[in-house]
Image 1 (cartoon, rainbow, N blue to C red):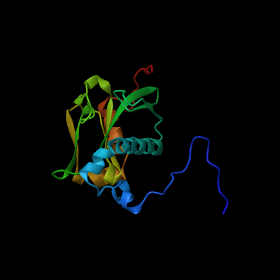
Image 2 (cartoon, helix red, strand yellow):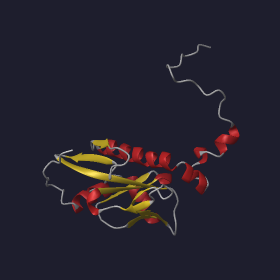
Image 3 (cartoon, one colour):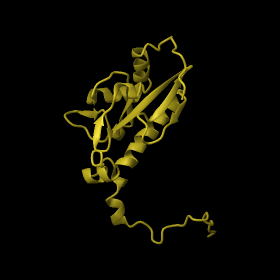
Image 4 (cartoon, rainbow, N blue to C red):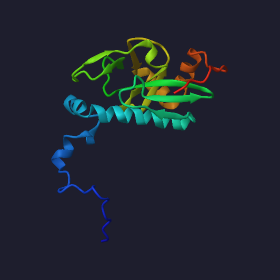
Length: 181
């Protein structure tokens, strides 16, 4: 069997991942422990951002990502208008809903978390990753939720909540001045 050469500096692991290691990983997501979710928080956050990118692409909305420590995760363009989007992901329902606290930082990090400021972003993209759904909102609150009864509608019409959020910002049929990056 032919062997493909590795790129300089990149080599295959000495031993393949064992089945016991894989059972403790994200292979069984979302049916994993809270510890596994915590250990993989960055990876899962990135997955939520990539899912939102996929939705934007399917809706024909140009998007760009931003550095990790920016107060927003994406910039989108609606005609000549650009909007800052903050992505939040959740993995488990509580009391029949996915609950989102709108905070910055990492709970176990050296600086902990702090509430986001209203001017940090224009839209929120709330992602329930186990259901592959996103709910966009322009509403400002310290917490938001995706209720169980909303899931099928968000899955069937992924652009509906974005359109509502744009309407809430007064962008239905009107444009704002383009923003400078």
